[in-house]
Image (cartoon, rainbow, N blue to C red; front, side):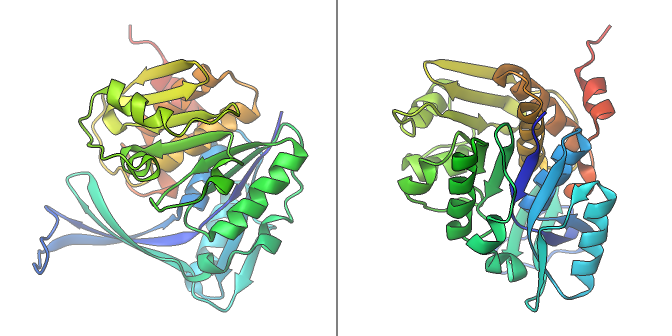
Length: 305
């Protein structure tokens, strides 16, 4: 069984809840302020660890109260923190407004912006391992991480979020690209909407295909998931649940997918499992603390009698 290595961000999420999101220039009354461990790297690592994968997180924390709290939280989730460096820059922070289960997020990178190629190449990757990253750390670090993974024979998963432009040199190092409609639209240079037909989503995803075999997986929120793998495509239907907080859903999907592929599950089975895991995640508050366990996902997958 392979291991999961995640190179990515670690944040403290400061969540303000309100009945609705303010318009530009408007002030609305909130109902609560909450603090949750988060950051896309930490979320994905916790999701993978909770679902049974031996998981190492590579990143940076500040020498401050948030940093100490986050390190302790990750250790409590059985995430290996030996490759998380401490720095004088403040710990990454995300300011989140949550209203009617939808969120807006402002991320202040802090220590995450200092993650370097030297940091990520310390990972002892091997054949059968899964290397995961996202766009909340510098691109040169991600490239170095995936180059090492490629040499080691590890599978690489990129979640290009938050959406930003990147070059094909990085994309060519990716075995599985996991992205939503916004991120797909940016990389494919195609305007997409949440309610676009699945066929249109598939056509857009095909523009990112290369001669080398690569899986392109598009998460569609409540509509489920569509994935292109060579000449085939997989459509996994959404699961009907009452969403409370969607903040960590995409990260839950990525971490669950990585854990399943590290355990040698088929792509289709891994997609079904990850989709179910994300459906559990959105029914809970917070990002990293909302990641489900194996028992939670098995319960969600149990057929209704």
